Length: 379
Ligand SMILES: Cc1cc2nc3c(=O)[nH]c(=O)nc-3n(C[C@H](O)[C@H](O)[C@H](O)COP(=O)(O)OP(=O)(O)OC[C@H]3O[C@@H](n4cnc5c(N)ncnc54)[C@H](O)[C@@H]3O)c2cc1C
Image (cartoon, rainbow, N blue to C red; front, side, top):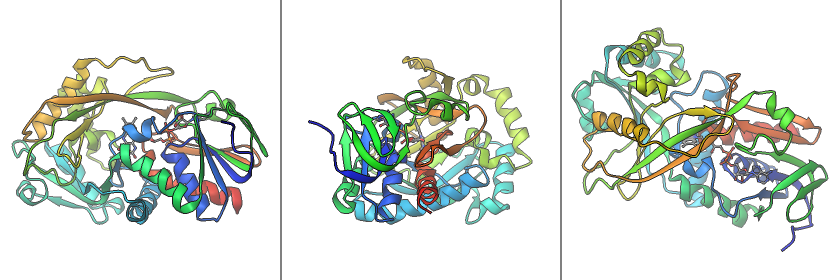
């Protein structure tokens, strides 16, 4: 089969959530769009993540603004695209006085709008399956939603194709972009403008542009625990002290330094493996639990069990698990900027943009970044 030869207004390279976000934003501009991906179906970070659309915890400024806008876009499309929202909201448990201080400082600031610090007794309502021992209180955020990424991302693509007339060319590697010509391994495509959303492929297209942001790659371990049985409901996404320490959104809280010092003192191995705890639930009652962070230009393919056991230990200390069997493991990779640039878009050629989330927050912010890129290309 050869590539479609019809001319398009816009070609998008990459059918991960960032590419799909651009297709959605461009469809809203009424453009004729083709999305090209080398894989037969979505296979990258976009289906390997938690499906956790996170607002609270995003870095102040652009990322927090984008997360709120992207969350609204998710809310707009889940119904039409037939994507179930598995749960809403986040409980970040404070298991130390230092974490509780961070929670209070955050809730009192601008980014804490809508959030509350609640006592342990409120877990009876918000998260009855959380362990009470050691919990000083928790930050409750109503802003988040969770979708099942391995079905939600294909559903977004199917909906874009069926309802917005977006063409998908899969199994085609893009080797050169020079509008109106886009060279693919399945023949040329004609498009007036192009957005390149290559995820962790830092070297095939416009490597000099991408290199300005000094990205490396980050490998994450992910676990699925067995269905927890009838009546065991998480009800919201769950995090704890480690996330108050890790997420840049809490950087402005004066007590975060003391919390980080405590974590460094008590949990050096956890810190060395870049572990913080996120737990979300799937419709079958199983839990997605993660994650770790290991950085390298080419991450190795190995996933040592010791890292998984550390993640599992934190989950067992935090939740009253009904079944702690690991039933599935996988790793995922995303680009991460050594310059601490959380996301960027750039202009290697006048009618071309390269767009990348370089901080592991693409599900949460990608739709908003895409709107900015399309506005920049067509304004
Ligand atoms: C384990 C894990 C957990 C995460 N959890 C969360 C979370 O809960 N919330 C959140 O907001 N973010 C999370 N993230 C981050 C988020 O998943 C990513 O930021 C996002 O998926 C990146 O999307 P993408 O489209 O850029 O990349 P990808 O999903 O990797 O897609 C890139 C696509 O581009 C294609 N491609 C690249 N180059 C070419 C080429 N030359 N020709 C053709 N095709 C090409 C690839 O085949 C691929 O399909 C997580 C990431 C991981 C790995």
